[in-house]
Image 1 (tube, rainbow, N blue to C red):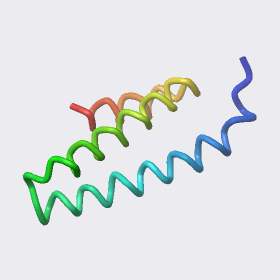
Image 2 (cartoon, helix red, strand yellow; image 1 turned 90 degrees about the horizontal axis):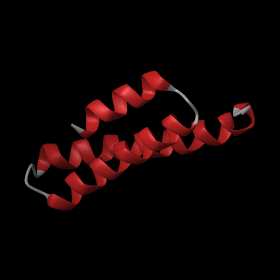
Image 3 (cartoon, rainbow, N blue to C red; image 1 turned 180 degrees about the horizontal axis):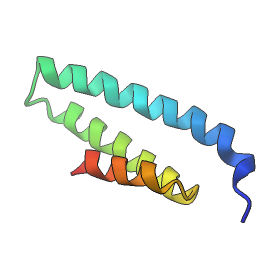
Length: 69
């Protein structure tokens, strides 16, 4: 299946997830036990992994999976 038509959408959504992940990392630096930041960080990595898998971007899947771990 040709997924190239979805590349721009993937990039746009990925940027948003990466922005959220970065914000949550900063929040965790300030409050390491903040459960909502941990949950948001995990959700961002998980969503990024799922989108990358759908697009067959294996390297991104590996990195996102490592972030989840």
